Image (cartoon, rainbow, N blue to C red; front, side, top):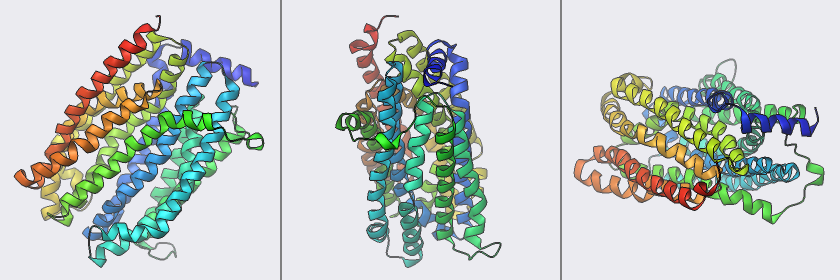
Length: 457
């Protein structure tokens, strides 16, 4: 099939197809694959929890570094996806292809930074929280392995967004699914030493993670070579363009920082919580793994919404852009309300998945019920942030996330912990979400007045 025919099909789908069926068609594969990814996150910690509370706490300490790795990869690919979608909407196919090539080049550059941290930063990072060797050694081992092996995840993220920006949501689903399933299968084998493999403990979980990322990378490469995609990567004629890098980072860098803020928040909260107990640190890590089952489907829907919004913004179709935004909020709210009900009704059962007993169980039940109050507010904020990114206003999303995940929550957690103990840290989550949502809606009002309202229906 010729590139022109593919481009025409892409135009028909994102520019003319009924919006709700379009969102479902574009989002369901990614939502499914993100659910599988969330399942992997939980299964990974469930197996690690069998090694003891210190093993679970060690993985929880390293979790912010993993978040930074994911944030850099996903943030850069969001900037890449936004740029490709806008260039496709403007019918500039050659510029879209050039953007895709730059996305993979930047992934390689980012990997070098993580390799350096893996070799030289893992131990100082772990020792900043504790002097307990039982906690430090598995944390250092896990951190160094996932950082050094992060090349595959970074490149895969860019390739998946290239496919999604062109309207193909099925191939990225299979990419993520293949890696997550590999990870789930290898976790018990590598951790406990089945089928003749040595029992690597916490390090085994890291090896399984990197191996799963490698499988995702191989499958993504296969799809990029074999599928008829509107955007093809042609390495032979690649030439670095400062303008293209700037355009990617204009949306991608705020998104990187925005998502990395969560890592900084987690590091700060761990520093506050460890003054109470290692169990409190483990509970925060367990919460983040559990909440991924609620948030991941919404993020998966974002993968479908981003190219739809970006395309229709580039095509100057305000009606379709706003319809996608409103439907996205309704779907996200539905998902979050279901998650809220589960966290309120079954917190003990959720904590029981991680062999939680005593202090770990008691702290966990209170944490899950309190933090989950922010879910409905987060639904609106997440979809509004997607609109900002799709229209090239990544800075708006950055400012909102700074409020939610740093400027408000960390000081509030510290102050409230002095008043209410460990419960004060949990109260800070819905408090910060409420303030950031108000700011996000003010930024939306500004975007509407300065740009969207001027686009003809």
